[in-house]
Amino acid sequence: TESEQQFDVVVLGSGPGGYSAAFRAADLGLKVALVERYLTLGGVCLNVGCIPSKALLHTIGVYEAAQTLSEQGIQFGEASIDLERLRGYKDGVIAKLTKGLAGMAKARKVEVITGTGRFIGPHQLQVENVAGTLTLGFKSAIIAAGSESVKLPFLPDDPRVVDSTGALQLQSIPEKMLIIGGGIIGLEMGTVYSGLGARLDVVEMQSGLMQGADRDLVRVWQNQNKHRFDQIMLNTKTISAEAKDDGIWVRFEGEGAPDEPQRYDLVLQAVGRSPNGKKIGAENAGVRVDERGFIAVDNQMRTNVPHIYAIGDIVGQPMLAHKAVHEGHVAAEVIAGQKSFFDARVIPSVAYTDPEVAWVGLTEEQAKAQGIAIEKGLFPWQASGRAIANNRDEGFTKLLFDAETKRILGGGIVGVGAGDLISEIVLAIEMGADQVDIAKTIHPHPTLGESVGMAAAASLGACTDI
Ligand code: FAD
Image (cartoon, rainbow, N blue to C red; front, top):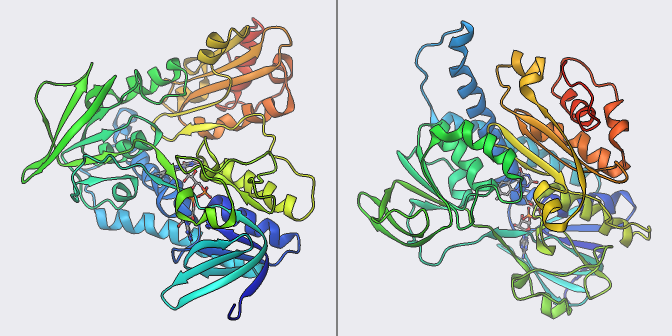
C-alpha cells in the first residue's frame, strides 16, 4: 500500500487503558502508535467521565460543607452560582490532564495519530481523519476502544434528555431532574445537580440503589441524601417519554410508579454502558466480538487472534479506569516478552457521592448467597474522634474475614473520604493479611484510617473506643 507506516504496536483508543498500554510499551523499547478519534487523549475517563465528574463533585462538596458551618460559628452571605465559571473550572482540570498526557506521549516518542481507526486486516489498521486516510501496519495491536452510554430507544431526541456526557456540560440548572438508573454514575451526577439546586427523582429497575454494594453501606448514604430526592422509584421501569414545551413528561411502570406521567426539566439516562467492539472492523482482523460488543481475552489480555490484545471497558465488567490501566500494562508487557498476567485478587468500587461509598472483595450479601462463613468487624465512625471533629460521623468501616483462616476477604466503607480509605483494605486483601495483622498495624491518630484498624480489632472482640 501507499507509504504504510510500520509499528511494533498500534493501540486503538487513548483512554486509561490505551494510554497506559502505549506508554508502558514505549518504555519497554517498542515503536508505538496511539490512535484516537478525538483531539485530546484520555478517553471517557479524563474528558467526560471520572475527572470532570470529580471536579464538579469537589466544588459542590465544598459548597455544601460551607453551608453547614454556621453551626460551628462561621456564617457566609447568600451564595450565588456562576455556571460558566464552574464549567470553566471543570474544563481547566480536564485540559491540565489531557495536556499532561500529550506531553508524556511526546516524551516517550509514542506517535499519536488522530482519526477513526478500523482494522482492515490482521496486521493493518486504517485511520480516517480530515486529512484523508492512512494505513498503519503492526506486529501487535491493543484494542482499547472503550464504551459508550446505553441509549433508551423510546426517549425523545431533545436537548433536555442527556447522558452523562450531556449532563457534564452543565448547560443549565433544572428545577426538576429525573435520573434513570440508580447506579454510581447517575447518583454522582444527581449529587452535582442537587447541590446546584435541582430536585431529584430517581427510577431504578432493581430493588435498591447502588447495586453491588452491601445495603448497610447504602442505607447510610441514603439517609444522608434524603433531602435531595422527591421520589426514589424502585423496582420500576421508565416506559415512555414525551417532549412538550413545558418539559419532558415521563411514564413509569412498577412498584414505585406514580399513576400520572411526571414532568421534568432534565432527564439523565444512566442505565449502563455498552462496549464499542462492533465499530472497529474487528472481523477484518479475525477478532471475535460477542453479540453485545465485548471482546473476550485470556489473562494476558490476548484475544482469539494471538497478536491482538484487548483491554478496558471493551473486555467486560467492571468498567472502571483502574482496571483498564492495569490491563493495559499487562498487554504491553506481554507484547514486550515479559511473563505478565492480570491476576488482581480484587478491584475496588467507589461511588464518589456525599458521603462516599466504597467496597472491595467479598460483600456480606455475596458471603450469605455463597454460604461462606465470615467473621465481621465493624467500626462506627460515631466512635472516631476525627469523624466527630469533622462533624461527619455518620459513616462506618466494615471488614469481612474468612471464619477459618481469619484472612481478610472484603470490606466496605461509607463516609467522607471512603474512596481514599478503601485502598488500605485492597492492599490487605492482596497481601493476604489477617485480623491480627490489620488490628496490630499502628494507624496515625486521629485519622479516619484508624477505623480500618479498629474494625479489625472489633472482629477480634477487642475494645474499640479511641
Ligand atoms: P475509554 O476511556 O472509553 O476510551 C476509549 C477511547 O477510544 C475513546 O477516547 C474513544 O474516542 C476511542 N475510540 C473508540 N473507537 C475508536 C476508533 N474506532 N478510532 C479511534 N478512537 C476510538 N471509572 C472509574 O474508575 N472511576 C470513576 O470515577 C469513573 N467515573 C466515571 C464517570 C462517568 C460519567 C463515566 C461515563 C464513566 C466513569 N468511569 C469511572 C468509567 C471510566 O471512564 C471507564 O472505565 C474508562 O474510561 C475505560 O477506559 P478505556 O481505556 O477502556 O476506554
